[in-house]
Image (cartoon, rainbow, N blue to C red):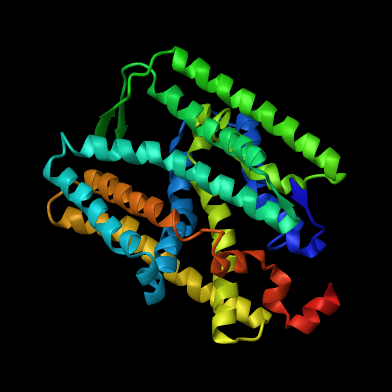
Length: 361
């Protein structure tokens, strides 16, 4: 691991307390509170709150991905397969599910349920690497492997735990089967997760000792947070209901920063609090509206055409998620300077002109 001393203010997008809260601390506190003071069951209150939070955070986070790809013709031309072919593939799966509810729909939903935590893992790794870059740390290949191995092992361990034995799950009235994995697979997955954690800690401790510099805690906070989500939190169903919300908070903070910086640079605008407020409102309202149209409007439209609302919701929500997974895999490539440079922005650069920001620092 190589290091360089960055400006302290560059480590956080917003501030130390806000970044820590949004990246994972808030979700960990919520988990502890639910374990100590609430039931493990998905009560009606938990489900209702989860739906309300989906309107204001989960759905806009999906919309933000679509907006980022499709609001620019240059983006579409740069990623034609993702922008044009992926929606067609997803649409074929959704239409096949409507045409064959008993044969196609269960496997369409199954694909979503397995890909979703895998996608979470990709975001978690990306957020760790973003903060490492902002902190002036560069993981070597072995360290990056150890970090990736631990993060993805939490996904594997959770998935294996749910897929052991012959079971039938239900999503929006759509039954789908488990993979029927043997019981020893769960033990093997947990051993891999524990070994990956030990390997990561040992390698990073050795690198930090060699560099005589500590790794800022926020670099590994997303990985620790995902472990809480998928290991102890995965067995606490009242908490698991809110994991997509916390995942969306991470995403929206970074996507918001990127959006404001890119628009600021592209338009030659002057940083100011007014700019941050107006652009945040514009971007937020667009994502809220698009999210509502995708997750509420389309299922209700399908229901008006004769399909059961619960079934329509399951299939269309699954289709939107699959499209999001495809798109998210290409629009955050850190090797592209058009992405990596704006991801180094902090709040002071958005609210103050360069001279004022330097003076304040």
